[in-house]
Image (tube, rainbow, N blue to C red):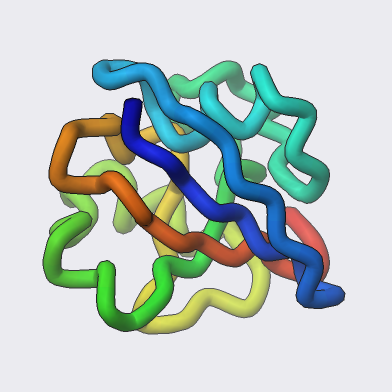
Length: 106
Ligand code: FES
């Protein structure tokens, strides 16, 4: 199973195993990762699953779809490596992915 590292705003990291086909948000919620609220349950309608993708993973993860880009406007402190974690499906190539959770969700 691919492993994903979640780093919180204080720098604490948690490494968890991710089921292929689930989303980076679902993996976080199932593992009680702090900092991801996911209020809409993954419908791309809340922006409270905002994460920053570590630079070396940005190209592998790929860019957001237009609907996600629109929703990212509602997230706080959006950066070029911002993504909504409910829109990232876990696949084999994402083994080792590192994401950071923001200081605050919208
Ligand atoms: Fe609501 Fe991702 S969980 S936009």
